[in-house]
Image (cartoon, rainbow, N blue to C red; front, side, top):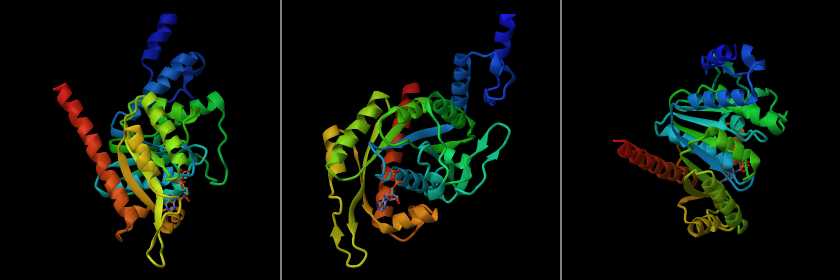
Length: 308
Ligand code: ADP
């Protein structure tokens, strides 16, 4: 009899989640865990490159970099998804202007929301239609909810999935990084102050610990050009990110200056890089995108030549 049940389970449909399945009460937690993991792996299997954006602490512009980097890739003709894995401060829907759009489910899962041609977004923040209402997830329930949610999203074929990780280097970013598996690279966002070195060190060590190649460090809020006189002001100093990259032996991916228009574009729900007007910020993202594309293509070439 037990054998029959096992045989049945082998036929488990990976397009379906365990919750709501007839076998839910008879399967062990290990079986359900394995099923949800296999389901997530299948959903992510059509994605060429998975890039994580992380930071040693919150408020440094991690989500801003995630959205503008993803948008910049899409503007260059790539098929891109941006995944908001920062469940306590899910800002991606607002920054992409999709926060009031309803989630559509097509039998096998949730459809990411189109931001513009080539860019789609998904966030647990979209599960609650009230943007002021935080979703409170705790402990194992939180881990299960994230896993099920990630496995629910139908990304389809993508060149890049940009994952906005929760801030810091604690349990939460760790569990998301473990769930997604085979991440191709991490971009670490920092600010130029002295503490940046400490925060970046933690983030670099975190990535190395879980075997995610560090693509490099981006220094955000790096100086500011006065909108009135054009003079450059080093509001939070400059150079901390570059120094951290040098000391930690990882590439420096460039500086993004403070530009008040970023705050306006974030609040308006349009990624700043969509603005065709030439700017320092636009140039910084173009450069970041080129460096990451080159690094990921080089890594793909290596894999291709090793398998031939
Ligand atoms: P994090 O994800 O690290 O918590 P956010 O991306 O949410 O940080 O950014 C925090 C705030 O700082 C937002 O209001 C955003 O618009 C603003 N911001 C981020 N980068 C810049 C920048 N280079 N210039 C001006 N404002 C910025």
